[in-house]
Every structure is written in C-alpha cells, then in structure tokens.
Amino acid sequence: MSWRIATRHVSSYRYASTVFASYNEARMTPVASHRQSVLESHVSIRPTAPPLRYVDYWATTVYAFDVHEPHDNLVVTGSSVVETAGAEVLNEDAGWELVHRPDVQDRYSELLLPTPYAPLEPALRDLAHDVGTSETPAQAVASVSAWVRSAMRYEPGTTQVSTSAVEAWRQGSGVCQDFAHLTLVLLRELGIPARYTSGYLHPRVAAAIGETVKGASHAWVEAWLGSWQPVDPTNGEPVGERHVTVARGRDYADVAPLHGLYHGGALEDLEVTVELTRVA
Image (cartoon, rainbow, N blue to C red; front, side, top):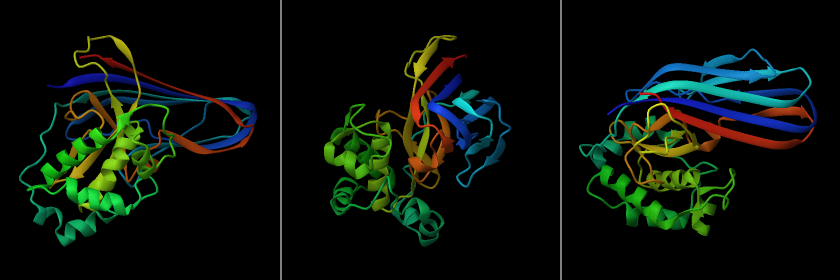
C-alpha cells in the first residue's frame, strides 16, 4: 500500500545579537528511490539567499547557501510531497558468503569502519557476535534490531545530538538517533555494511487524509543484504509507507538537516517543527 505525504520542516535560529555572515548546508529534500517518488520539493531561506543545489557523496540533495546581510534570525523551510511504498521484507536469500565477499567488503568499506558516533567498543564486539550469530545475515539484522530495542529505553532528553552509541548504550536510554547508531556498531562488527538513514515517520498508522499532524525527524538503518534493506530498531516495525527518507550516510554527522558556521552574536534559541500530512 502506498501513501502520499506532504512534509514541512522548519528550522528557526534566533541570535542574541546581530549575525553578520553565515555559511550553511541544508539536507531537507527527500531522496528518490525504488520505494519513494519525490513529486514536489522546495527549500526556502530567510533572509533570502541564493542556494547552490548539489548531490553529495551519499546521494543526498544539499542546499548550500551564504547569508551576507546582517540578521538576527535565520529560518530555513523544507517542503515536499512524496509517494512512499509499502513495507519491505528483509532478503533471506543473501548468505554470509555474499555479504563477506572481498569485493563487497571493499566496496562498502566506509560503511564498515567505526565513526565518532558509532565507535569501536570491545564489549560491543563480543555482544554483536553473541546476538548476531544466525543462519543468514537477514536474521542477524533482525536479531540485532530486536536486541537494541530491548536494551535501550526510548527516553527523550537523556542524550544530546553529540552522544555516541557507546555512551547511550552505557546509560541504557536515548532516542532514535542513539538506537540507530548502536545498531550500526553491532552490524558493522558482524561485517554487514550498514548506513544511517534519516527522514520522518508519520506517527499515525491509520492517518486521515488531509489531516496535518506534528511530527519529528526520525532515524533508522539500512543494511546491505545483496541490496540495501531498511530496518527500524526504534519501533520494531518494517520500514514502509509511513517512512519518508531524506538523507543517508555513515552516521548523523553526514545527514544533519542544517549545519554551518556564522560570525556574530551567540545562538539564543533554536526551534524545529515538522508537520506531516497524508494527502492520499
């Protein structure tokens, strides 16, 4: 079953005093794939700045822009309409000999190496092999996802955007970003290429057509099992029509919706709102 979803993501920065220049990158545009068609997309910037649109190394659409007029607010809005496909079943046909094949390991080496958000940890290496010892890589992915969900409490406010998978695991709580990072650590320890995926998840299974609801950015994982297969360790449900994919990378650092540098007053407030509407 497919859905058509309209998204509106607004990031609003307010500064304590005048900012004289800022340099930014926005990743707010959904990606086209076999399970997602992008029907409309637009990024607006206030103060007005002409963006440079390009596709990064991980196939994410980026709007890069500089603001050179004095300002005390910066508002970036990403709007889109996408059509999403139903849930996928993990590929049970892919065996360990395929996933561990030297050319596969070489091709996806960047998605097997540790990163600042998904670092090496000896205790997690042993745990990965305990949890992920399965007949097929697909079973290992499902087992790791289930273990992360059982080992972590979903508890907003207990971690920060800079928290690593190891830090979140040690305290036993976090949000979707932490669940995804911990899943990446374990899958990579098993030699399964895995990438961080960000976007949105419509919160209502039986969403009414035309009703706008409050949403939030969401994160899940894609594992290479002969092709890229998604898994959502936070919710434990298949990635399907309620998921909207925006960006992919090694970890959160590659997919942040908005980041940059600026010269001027300190940041006083950041407000982020996400609105999702099922339109068909």
